[in-house]
Image (cartoon, rainbow, N blue to C red; front, side):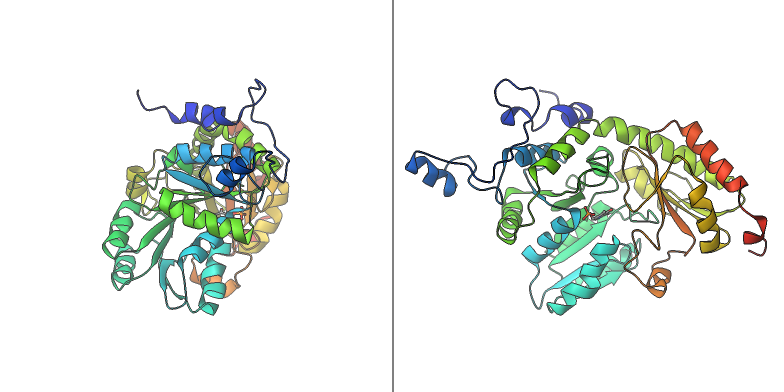
Length: 399
Ligand SMILES: *Cc1c(COP(=O)(O)O)cnc(C)c1O
């Protein structure tokens, strides 16, 4: 049969196996345990010889539907889920990294991920090397010296830098490293890292997958062999996805393709508009032809995503005046939701970092992260326009 398209997969994948009583929707199974009158059957399920559920920390039917949906969308053999995106990242790294191991990554990973690399892994005697994001030669050089894990994120948060995943995956493979990609910003609609050669794909499902900012969750997809190891770490350590959250994520994912297409369209239109605004110093969006790695993005992504960022003249003072004026944007730390969300990077993705650390990462203090929602783009642009018009001119007179 012809391969099923993403829009159809978003709706149907993973659901049928979990339906009960003729229901057309996956039930929220709020049972902590699953009982058996037949001791032999119980034993078989408990020892993995038969499909079924035993205890909610391990598996649950609603959670399994979520895992199947993301697994199919990513084109993976297996998937497991987590209570949050950070749990997916920390549990995956903890599954494979031990004292004496070496991990290579980039400077611009998500703020929480960066903290794992700079604060927690070094305490476990894991050597961490963070390369300049987008400096492919530097990454190749470090990987060739030998490493257990090559960890990537593309596009990055918040300056939407792009890394050539296929090229880096090859470097990783050549060095015998496990290649892990955080695909939260692109989603499987726009980018499929496993097809590009990665071993594992990680998601914060909290963002675009759920898409409604009402549930936390995470996922990891890859080969059965690798995912089983990560699942084992998670089932024992306990960062399990809650069934109600799994249901909300599943429900959100039905419209994934529709939402992502609209968010990409809105983001590109807004990025182009922002380039025409005087107060705006710079605009970061991989869909803009002047983005330093636009060509790589064009090659490995089917569209450029709903995330962009821009720096304003006058820095933090301008941000302080501008953002409260926006009527159709939540001023909040999340992203990827149906409503537009804005926030300064210094209070959102990189709040854990010092101003010096942010500067070293190329994040101006006046940078605004903009997660385009699915509103009418004319309304979003009018909203931005009136906010820019309202700025007191003295703020950026000298800049
Ligand atoms: C939000 C985010 C995470 C962490 O996810 P949580 O669900 O908040 O724990 C990881 N990576 C990226 C790229 C993110 O945007």
